[in-house]
Length: 151
Image (cartoon, rainbow, N blue to C red; front, top):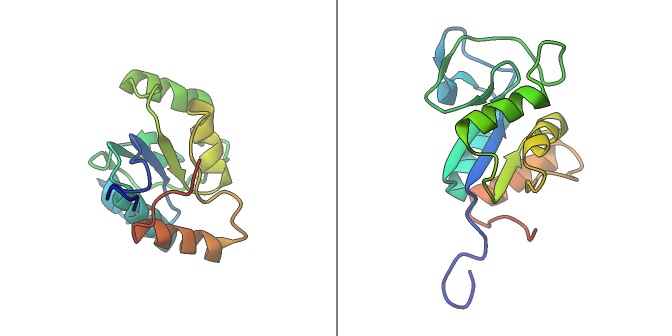
């Protein structure tokens, strides 16, 4: 906290979190579809940041609202049939969210690369982590309200 009692971090207008390889076996809301530990940790950290908008970047579908109902799929980021930077830009343009900022991306390098293709100014608090353990520790710090590191 700062001396005036305000949080020492900026609340992002948009947080984009990664999807996950572990999924439910039947159609579900995007908020419920991804069941893996990493995705859940990203989601809890994103919620703690209190963004104006929280989206999931699905490797198959692109930008998903939490209430979007989708079928299970098996497409990792970077696969031949995965969403591309061009598709992501088209989706963001259609939603009129290209100009948002600050934007935070929580996920791995491929996820962050796609997000950066639309929002070059994106904040990436997991960048430079030396493995999954350090990423999970950073996500826990965000979840516990320690905010984003300085830009």
